[in-house]
Image 1 (cartoon, rainbow, N blue to C red):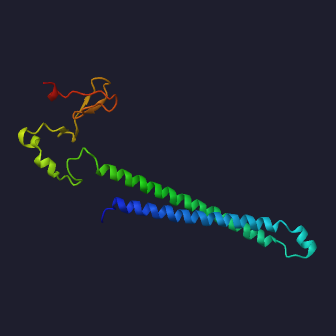
Image 2 (image 1 turned 180 degrees about the vertical axis):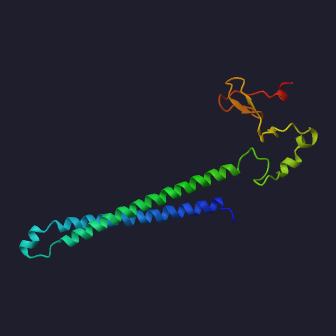
Image 3 (image 1 turned 30 degrees about the vertical axis):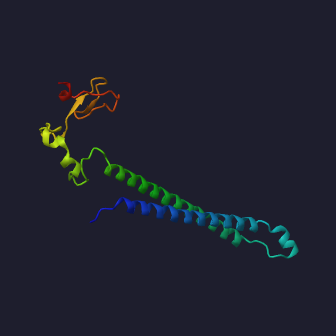
Length: 171
C-alpha cells in the first residue's frame, strides 16, 4: 500500500472546502425557499376572500421539508469543512516533520552529501551514542537551572532557555 503524499492531502482538502461551500450554498437556498413557502402559505386571508389561489397546508408542509433538508445540507457542509481542516493540519505536520533541521539526511535515514564532505566527520572520532542501548531511549540529564529532564545533546534548555554546557565543551 502506497503512502499518501502531502500534496495529495492538500488537494483533498481544497476539494472538500470547495464542495463544502457548494453544499452550504445549496442548503442556504433550500432554507430560504422553505421559509418563503411557509410564509406564503400563511397569507391566505385575502386570497380566499378575493378568489386568488392562496397558500395551502401542503405548501406549508413542503416549506417545512425544504427547511429541514436545507439545515441538513448545511450540517453536511460543516462536517466537510472540518474534515478539510483536519487534512490541512495533517499536511502541515507532515511537511514540518519532513523539513526538520535536526535530520542530517532524507527521511529514509540516508546522509546528505554535505554530511559526507564535512571536515568534522573525517577529523574527529565519533562521539558516544546519546541512545542508551539497554533502554533504547535518548539519554537524559537534569537542567542545571530548572532541574527539568533534557536530552544530553541539548545546547539550550527548552523549559527555561538557559544555555547548557556539555561535559565535552567544559574541558
